[in-house]
Length: 367
Image (cartoon, rainbow, N blue to C red; front, side):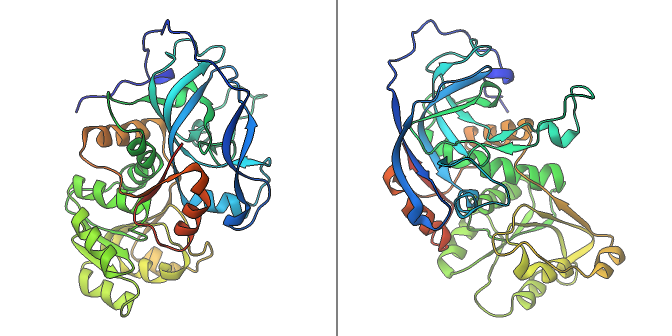
């Protein structure tokens, strides 16, 4: 597979001689100044951001919504500066560069890896007196892409192929990288294995179904409603369980008995955790990537030690996983499912739709 060229520390593109475009003093952004429901979101004018050392300024062309945007808006266990600009997915063109990022061409079309300080997971340190920066996410710990301009590290850029749509890139970044890392890097998914995906109609879920089928796995997707079930079958799910019809555990056993499931990717959390653990075959693995329906679960450890199960956590992805996943998107082997495209003024409507479960795939915001 041909590798797509990248920017920053992921490539060495030629230096552009074009002067930067004229800048305005303010920009429009979808912000919230207090935590609460979708009604706290509004479009406002913010000061035009300037890139610092090693950073670039992106003229945002498209962003997209994730459940992370809902949690950030509602309030997290830690404080974030307000007003806040959400949006972990950013696609656009480089508008300006800071000191140390002069090698990034102004005008280049890019998508942004939303993970920051990934080496925190590796335990990498820069000396006894320099603590490792904690892992962070663009759009959560710092301003994101729901604005006309965004500041990001040059090292987080990946160049878009010629003519590749900004909207597609913005819909793909976080969810495909997350699904890749969970299924392949953490979960070790192999061809022929049975993999179960909860929350399969969401962004990560629709990405996971496609990636698992591409690997050659057999996919069981969990969703709600006959229309979503048909869509997931079209994406490659071999079996679909409608969680709103019948007994979930019984329906799952009918599909997987007597062998059980090899790997589960769970983004839901509490409601089906006990059933999921019981459904794993001996030596099976469950990878949790979220808890959209509740973070507190109860696990019968007798199932875990007797069947030698593995319970794994996965968040976002490494820089290498991001590039690998996006190259599959660029090649057309997989692709994001876009439910709707909204304008910046309609971000609150997107939050409501995502919160109410009325989204199949991704909500994209064209900036």
